[in-house]
Length: 299
Image (cartoon, rainbow, N blue to C red; front, side, top):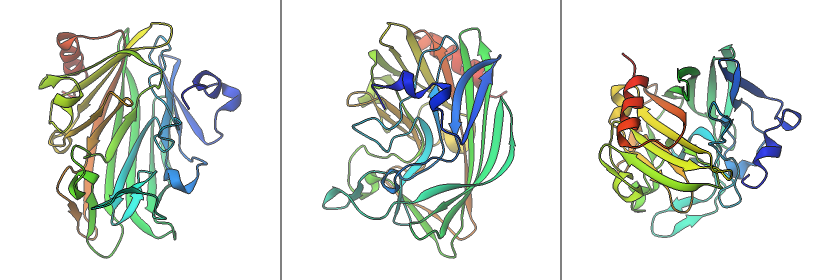
């Protein structure tokens, strides 16, 4: 998207299959639950636009450089040999390549949706329509402070096949540092004064591939308004996952299901993950980010 974010966020151009989420009566996010995208983007539900309480845009979707990156979504580059991330597939010994291996996440049934929360079931299917994963997804939003709100993103993924299902990242195939796959946030394209913080260090190099109690990315929009996105695990399983961070070519943060070793799900087996994303106005330093993370963390 990038250069036309304002136009695309208007009511007139909002995709029809969208749930609007509000905090204190303010619209803070749109959840596109059935996207009309080409197969090469691995179509899936996503949140975009997402905004701070003051209205700063903190997501991007379908940017020119990575048209398969979609606001906030669940995506994985290799599940049983299918690409649920979109774009090129990393091939060991060769590198990224365009393959006809893209999957789709399909909405199945609403469990509920309101202005503050939603829950639905999905199937992750291959190009032939065969189910690979079953998912139950819950998303909610709530005020945290006068200048911040928190987005909860909880997923339960179950093997829908009759054989073991292997989940890999490109790092498991030899692409160093590319352990992505799972919850992923794509930050806005036009951003100034970018800073990456965590309790384990600062900057992309220190945080990418690390486990940390939280990760914060701050920046400013084209009008100079500052914002911070703060990500933290909300359960023990998610706390053990590593962070995938990009802050140079583009802004992105992910909580990785697996890094450099494959994750194997037996038939019927399932995994659960729960991420909290705090959306805040202003650029936070390490102390302020830590305090906000503590305030957002479940009791």
